[in-house]
Image (cartoon, rainbow, N blue to C red; front, side, top):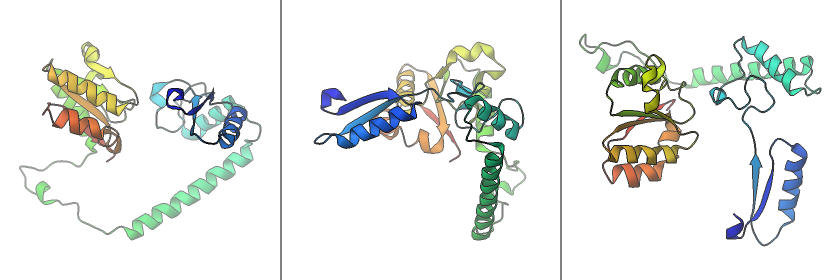
Length: 234
C-alpha cells in the first residue's frame, strides 16, 4: 500500500482506542487515500471460540445450549456494561423482531405446490433434502477415486464437505483447507485439474461463484479444466 502512495496505518484491531485514533488520523490526511490494516484473531476473548476455525459463521456454541454458551462468552469478554437484565432485554427485542419478519415473509410469499413434475413419477421419486446433504453423501461416495481432491474455504462442515474424509481418515491428505480465499482455491483447483486430478471446490453459493469470478472465467472455463463447483445456501 505504501509503495502505491497510500497512507498506511497498522493497528491492533481489538483495541477500540487505537481504532478510533486511526479513523481520526485518516480523516486528517489530505491528498491521498488511507488504508487501515487491523490485526485480529477470530473469536478473540471467547475461550471456546478464539482462533478456532469451526466457529466461522455460526452463533456462540460450546457444547451446551445457546443461551448458556452466550452467557459463557459474555463472561469471558468481561464487559461490566452487559448486565443480565440488559442482555435479556436485547434478546427479547431480537426475538420479537424475528417473529415480525417471519410473519411478514410468510404472508408476502406466494404459495406453491412442492409436488414438482420431476418428482412425481415413481422412477424419479426422491425425498426432499438440503442440497449440501446430498453433496456430502456424493463426495463421500466419489472419494474412493484417488484422482479426487477436495478443497475447502473454512466452512467445510457447514457444506458437508467433511463427509469426504470423516469416515475415511486415509483421505485427509487429499483434502486441502485453503481458508477464506475462494479466488486462490479456484486457482489451486485449476492447477490440480491441469495435472489430471478432479478437484471439488465448495463454499456458500454467493462466494464460490462470486468472489472467484475472474478465476472461474479466465482460468477454469477458458482452459476447459475439469473443476467441480459445489455450493450451498444459494
